[in-house]
Amino acid sequence: MTETLTIPRPDDWHLHLRDGAMLKAVLPETARHFGRAIIMPNLVPPVVTGDQAAAYRERILAALPEGMAFEPLMTLYLTEDTDPADVAAAHASGLVKAVKLYPAGATTNSASGVSDFNKVRGVLEKMAEIGLPLCVHGEVTDADIDIFDREAVFIDRVLDPIRKSTPGLRVVMEHITTKNGVDYVKSNAAGLGATITTHHLIINRNHILVGGIKPHYYCLPVAKREEHRQALRAAATSGDARFFLGTDSAPHTDPNKESACGCAGCFTATNTMPLLAHVFEEESALDKLAGFASENGPAFYGLPVSDETLSLSKSDAAVDFPEKIETGEGPVTVFDPGFDVHWHAE
Ligand code: OTD
Ligand code: ZN
Ligand code: ZN
Image (cartoon, rainbow, N blue to C red; front, side, top):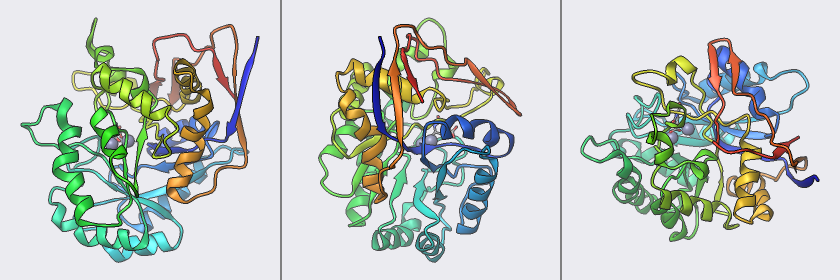
């Protein structure tokens, strides 16, 4: 028996595509199912200026296989030296859809991020004025704050003060991992949204640590306790338009993950849509999947919902996904949910 669900073609509101050989290998994994994605700017060196974003966009389009359609939505990496006028020009030309705030040192390639938030005040005020959203990696980096508490502390110490001092600034809390993040979004009225990853709907911290360390489940922000995963599932499947999909699919080669100091990131581009269908079915919320993956994100960003569709079908037999994809830089392991998946996307 086959069950089918058709939704508007989804978008990924938080994606890492990298560059060079890795870009070429991972881009088709996203473009197969997704129409657009917000492209993270944490390259080495980061994408800081409008010119750099335009050049990166060209490299992405050049890496797209013949016959595939995909629209990269570019972002700028906010530094303490970012020029408000450059940001405004990149937005006015239609090139840039968001600016990304990384607290310095919070995650992969975030060394050029912000340490002194007073130094970016001018940029944030300009963004509020022109309606350009700020995407936020919401974790403090203080050595004395436990890694499992860094998101909750960031909300109180950094995010709430920034939002109060910059009225009108539209903010996306990226990849929320806690009930605190869910509650903060819900307690605020306008101009605040949050992305949720596929993997944070599936794993909690036990998956990383019980029965041996699982480097392919290690990402930042690190997965939290089960009660937080449950809060994320409730938010994603609630139909509340402030929550939308951002996979944070972040490829690293196996040698870089399976190491004494393994890189953070889960690579979920390949199987995200089938996994989401599985999760939403478990939550008796298949009717909410279109909102989460295809409608709420465009609404936040002021873009049209796709007029194309994606069909998901469920079969009795479990579906086989590739365990790894090959890239010019080495193999990248595809996220393994740890259960059989019966959904297939086309
Ligand atoms: N988290 N890995 C990466 C980025 C994200 O915080 C993030 O956005 C990465 O590898 O770029 C990760 O675990
Ligand atoms: Zn992040
Ligand atoms: Zn990310």
